[in-house]
Image 1 (cartoon, rainbow, N blue to C red):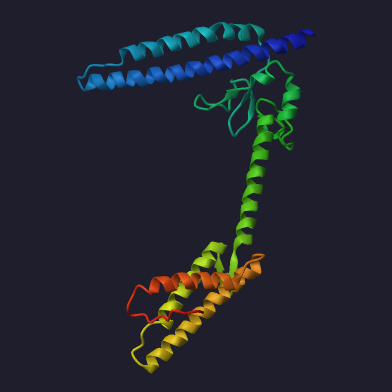
Image 2: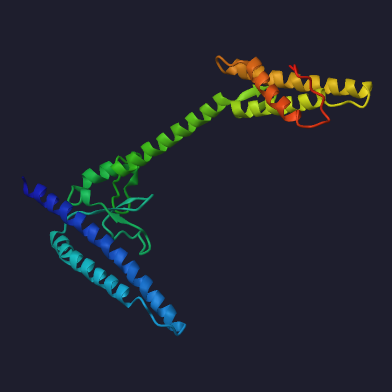
Length: 271
């Protein structure tokens, strides 16, 4: 192993441990701030603070995390190796000192590249490389950093899945004239509605012959509409029986309408 390889190994290992220690520190700081805020609020209300033990434990956790980070930070400072920092959704920077970074900017150290040759990582980062940190960055080249490759692949996969869903939804549609049903079930529900009105009109007790003729005319239109939908499903779905769905819906609606006295339904009623 060359000296450069040995340094890079130390850099990667140290920075990986340091990132973990920083994360522990950040979590502990959040806990301490949370308990201190509760303590301040209870004091304002003149109430006793009952989370003293929890605050002490959080403070101990913070002290331990800082103690864990301190020697690692010292090693990193002495080693003075290259470091690369990535801003989520943004650029790759040379350490944390770029003038484009603010103290509020979320930036993550990438320990897997610590100690690497700058030209190697900048070439890998491509368009994601900060041109302030790296004036010669190849901005016309897509980033090949694994995180960006994974993001592109995830977006492509998501787009493909959405396209597949759209195609599946389109394939599931039942088109009847200008009417589009989103699914076979939706179309069959409409058949049920048409058959329901058909049965109601066909077997309703009429007031007179004119009323009977009017009801029969409407019932015929209802049945025709139901048949049109059933035939459209049969045309779109292999092995589908338009006759079977019409008879099934008819039988169900006849059973429902027999409960009411204002319908006169013969025992052998059929479509």
